[in-house]
Image (cartoon, rainbow over all chains, first blue to last red; front, side):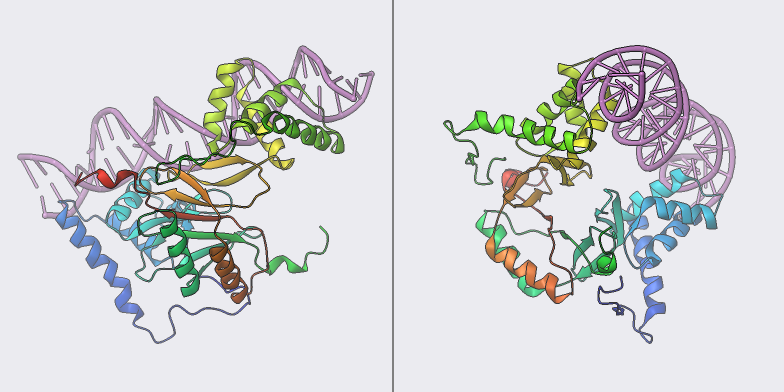
Length: 168
Length: 168
DNA sequence: ATGAATGCAAAGGTTTTGCACCCCC
DNA sequence: GGGGGTGCAAAACCTTTGCATTCAT
């Protein structure tokens, strides 16, 4: 979750939420998936999962890769890539969108739907949800004959962080 | 420009439009830009520009690269990449969005603003413009404190091409 | 013990860069 | 003739793959 453009923090996990429970939820889900698919639960994969899933916002695989390498140098890049793939298959992670530089970003799966605004200046990504916009979009899609479907809605705009820069 | 989801063709350049004039417009703009920046107008760059700018819809740089290599084997990949960069700087081309496979797409600059729908099944890209949606989006952005700005709006949805596929 | 998972290194694919040469202005 | 542009090849990067080994079940 990102800082809102106005500078305030949007608290996704207020101080007294049931955070601890959350952090084990994915382990259960992961193991369920692994069992179902006759895959095995291993330490390297769990570590990658841990690091990937505790990230609250969008990350690129390179960032994850570096963090894993830092904390667990013995885990190879190949394993990170393979684990991310598995986590996507398991539905715990999904590709969200491309950053303003064109890199694929991942995000922990979240049941509440949200759209994204990517700042074309600073690259910051903001999540938001707007009923009116959802409605208008649905209508527009329907008018064009598209089937109702999940959508990723990404708006590239300018946040106000850089407002100060004068004429640069 | 793409086939509309309903199967009809949307004709962007009807048979008797002033197509010829269009095809030289970019040369003028390009040369203006080059002059302004003290750059030189050269044949390889012009050829890349020609091929890139005559494409009516979205293309990936790899496709362009292959087409250039095919028509002008003497032009090196490096030149293609460099030319695309220059054309972007000149405002004649711009990165549009990512394809459903995550590759950056380019598009010839077009004054009329449009949004994109990417079909998550077949990858087909459709352009559209919807006033209501634009309005709702502007409001949503404003509410979040974002500065009015150009936006790229990409919706990933399902078109109906694959409706026939039964249970695959 | 069986086969999935891993680490390593090599391969693959795309884009960038260094450099000598070329050619536009 | 000066400096931008080009082609070539090498380098840089990121990701995937093959294979022997390890390890979960």
